Length: 450
Image (tube, rainbow, N blue to C red; front, top):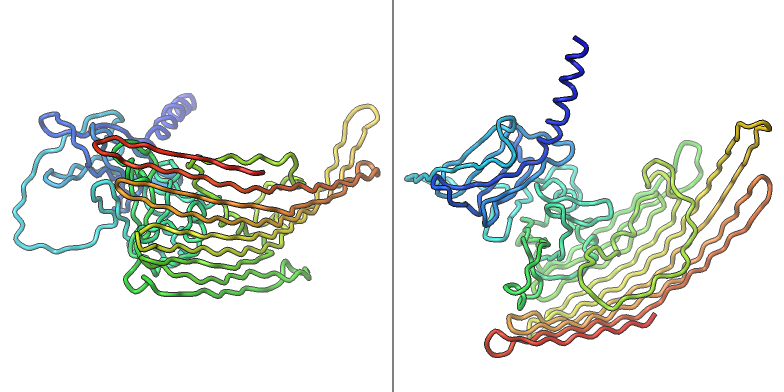
């Protein structure tokens, strides 16, 4: 009996692992491929676990996110009868045939769907996916099928990073979109749009194919072109018996219109929360003039196997302001500036005992303190039209980082000091113009001083 149970365990476990990924092809009764079919994985109660659409050749592929469970897979398309299969019945690679269906409708009751497809655009209604504990739109996006939010703040669609993050069709943040996704309240947002295979340059949309998607935030009518602000202050002491005074502050102003958009903020905390990621570039797809990496870095002693928020002893300040103005010719002028100050302390004690004849012991005590003082600026002008594209992006960076530490090895003390410096100015220029017929020419230049 024990051998039979062991045999069953070996067989069942691999099958359950394989069942977490599904792929196949959808066609009609005559065998013709059906593109644009909605393929949905659902729980027994009808909750959506994963969603995709069939490609031009009728093929599809989707996976069950970690920690989720699906009971059925459904196929639906206008003009065809909906097909629902149990997960246990479905076999990867099989062909799903859908029968045509015509229904005469006398009375129509319109109810909003959580996900609606319009061409290459998927519309996710925020009201369907939002929960009471969600404080930012990033919390809601993380619950939307096909979308995920990573620990660094970047957003992925179907496993690939997005290449643009728009608000009302405008690119205010460039690659620093975590400032919006981590701070914009879901109360202000009507829907999140996924623009599949998004080519940001209008002239190239039928020339160069893009595999990345873009996100567009559609605001509610009462949130458009309205100045709003946030002021939050939290303070208290640390663990029991600790005299350290903790703080977490957020001050923000923002406006999102069709001609002007702006977001400015000041954040500070010493609780271990990582707010540095909000001013990092999360869309490193565009080519540009390279900058040299520094030869030295601040000291790092490594972290324990616990969450970063529990192991960081920090004092962080972030200031950022972002402005986007539409010119009379509908071109974009974007200005961004940020400042980061972060001071972190680390202490590590390690003892190694060698069980040989004399039982040697090595005791290593290390302490370190790092300071980051970084300034960034960007001025970008872009014209994105059907027959003309121009972009000039000027960036600058300077830091005053330094770190120091002391290591004691079996009573012998060593002092460490690192003063890395990195400064650069980069200008990237690109122009594409369409001539008569289907011809075009382009001019590009890159300048970098490091």
